[in-house]
Image (spheres, rainbow, N blue to C red):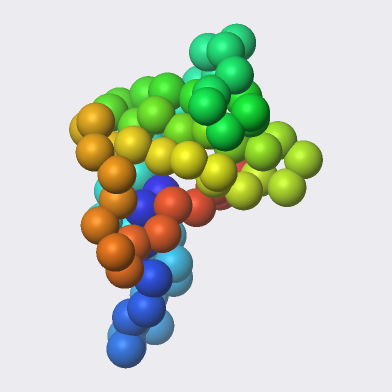
Length: 75
């Protein structure tokens, strides 16, 4: 999910409900430039640390995220 880093008032909405973009990604079997496994799907390319579920690198539609947006892994 791509979510705003800071939201003044979500009006009771969850982080998931505040997402501006979400996608299901699948492992490619490749390692990204960050050294972590690469995942792709629905315009998202992400290198994700499988042990911490931290997004180490991400492209959305071929571009880096704008400042103020954060990529999160959810189950």
